[in-house]
Image 1 (cartoon, one colour):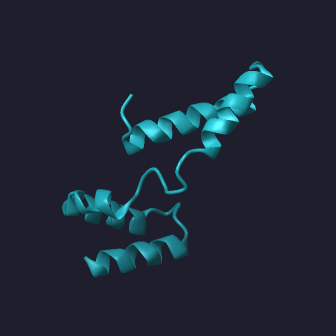
Image 2 (cartoon, one colour):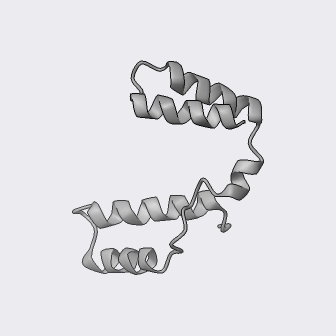
Image 3 (cartoon, helix red, strand yellow):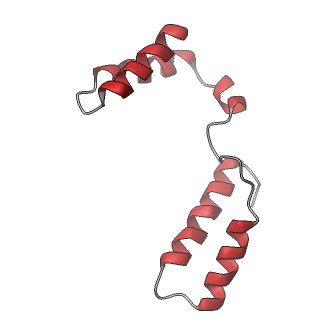
Length: 87
C-alpha cells in the first residue's frame, strides 16, 4: 500500500467502519482506534497542492453547475459564484 491521500483516506474509512461494526472483536476495534489516533491531523483530500493540478475548465464547469443547481443552498450558490469570479 502506498501512502497517497487516497490510500490514507481508504484506510481511515475501513477503520472507522470497523469501530461501528457490532460483529468485530474488541481487540480489532482497539487496533482500529489506535491506528486512527496515529493518523495525521491534516485532511486527506483537498490540499492546495492537489488543487493546483486540477483542470480550470472542469473546476469552472463544476462551479457553474453548483450555481444553477436548484438543490444547492443560496449560501452555496454565492460561494460558488465568488470562486468562479476569482478565477
